[in-house]
Amino acid sequence: MKHLNLIILLFLSLTVFSQEKLSIEDCYTLVYKNYPLAKQHSLLTKQNELDLAVIKTKKLPQLDFSAQATYQSDVTSIPIVIPGSTIKAPNKDQYKATVSLNQLIYDGGIIDVTSKVKKSRLKTQQKQVEVNLYQLKQQVNQLYFSILLLQEKRKLLVAKRTQLETTLKEIKTGVKFGMLLPTSDTILEAELLKINQQFVEIDFNKTSLIETLSKLIGHGISVNITLENPEIITNLEPEIKRPELSLFKLQKEQIEASEQLITKKNSPKLLGFATGGYGNPGLNALDNSFQTYYMAGLKINWNIFDWNASKKERKSLQVDKEIIDNQQEIFTLNTAIEINQQLTEINKISNFIETDKTIIKLRKQILKSTNSQLKNGVITSSAYITELTNLYEAENNLSLHKIQLLLAKTNYKTIKGN
Image (tube, rainbow, N blue to C red; front, side):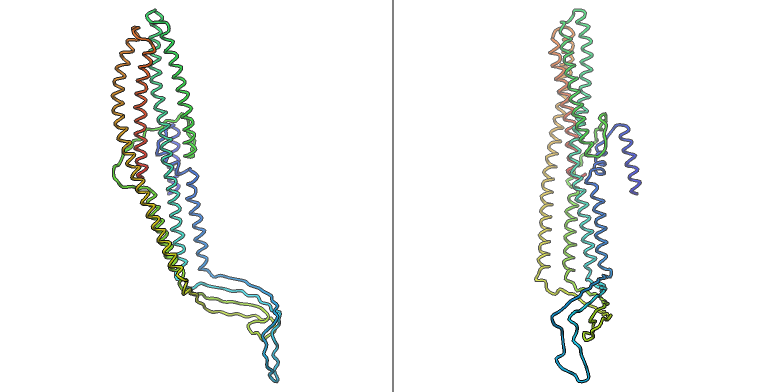
């Protein structure tokens, strides 16, 4: 299934970039896939598998080897003489080599709970990676819509240049036949040169932003790419679906697993053991010769009293839970404030757009009249350029507000977690 998803993603990417089009959803997909932080997801999984493998070894027999040679100043001796019997005291130099086998039989479930804590920790860490990647979406939004704005500005500038070039041809004809002043066309030509400078500025700014976005999403982007205007549907439901909320939940689950571990820590542990050795003396301390020996048995370890350390650890974990609840409360409050700010921004810009449309309608009427006056020599080219620029600025404002509205709606969705 993973291979199929990868093939689909690659096919989608090839299709998008071969057509030199890019959507904001493509950017989200690529940043989640290519941003260096995304690698931590698989690294954390690999680390967890190793940790669990280490924990499981505690259920396996533990084999220890020990060897020592000692010399002691005194040894145990029998202070009586038994007729017909000679009991030699042990040597002061003694030697011992042992192999011990220990097998955990019962641990009160501490190994299983330790594994549970590790698994819970993995989920928390991976969710933290997801949260950090999600926070990059607003950075993607800002870059994407900044490029989109420059893209729209260029379109308007092309339209302005085309209109100016058309007017210039008509004015040149008027100058040629003496109907207009000789400098009328010169002013328009100077304005065309200014427009060419604006093209250069837009192209340089767009290239810079595209390079930044390209590095962020980890994929090369052509400077000739066309960004698509996203269709944003704002859902006004109050529910927040941010990954941070899942992170808070997983953090508390990890604490609960740690509480279980503390409870199990003081449980009795039953172990079986066997030791085989070779030394002088052996188990018979009265035999001064090298001997082989062995012993086997069971033992119980039980920490009956830990000076209330476990109780204090559980209280500390409860404080951790309260801290997480407090962090969630702060996050929810701040998110609600951001959502309200974006809603206000959306309503404000929507009103601006309606006003922009009215202004453009009036500016077009004024320019139409000014154009006629210019051709008839009633006004100068400077007056015409002023009105043409006023119309261009009005159209530019409308374009700006439309992009700002899309950005506000996208940020609204991003903040809510849709």
